[in-house]
Length: 124
Image (cartoon, rainbow, N blue to C red; front, side, top):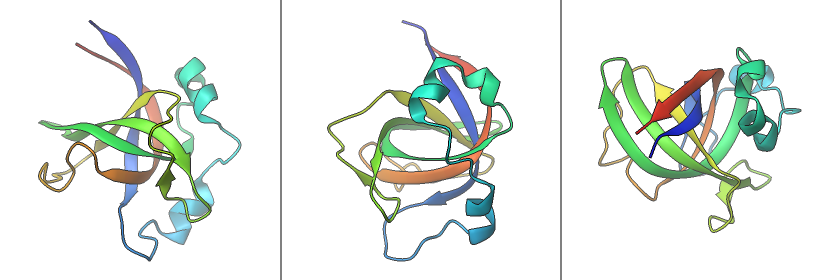
């Protein structure tokens, strides 16, 4: 089965802990008017926009261009941490242009990411 998912090139990743790892500078770039539903409907029209999304990792794979995370989306709480992990509007891909250890970034890990929408990629 082929599935088309929109892809985000990561500027930063936030995982666990109490302090925000995403810099204030990156957070200033986030367009908070773009909903996940809008991204799913027409990701190409949001190319170049910086978004902030939360979810749970489905899979992490290493590629020549970096680490590709397949994530199912969840709501975020007021601290921008993923919540309600049993409810999702869909999946998205996040590409980190570097190495992320798949033992750390593995299936089931909650993540919050900030990044630029770069297009659509089809997975087999």
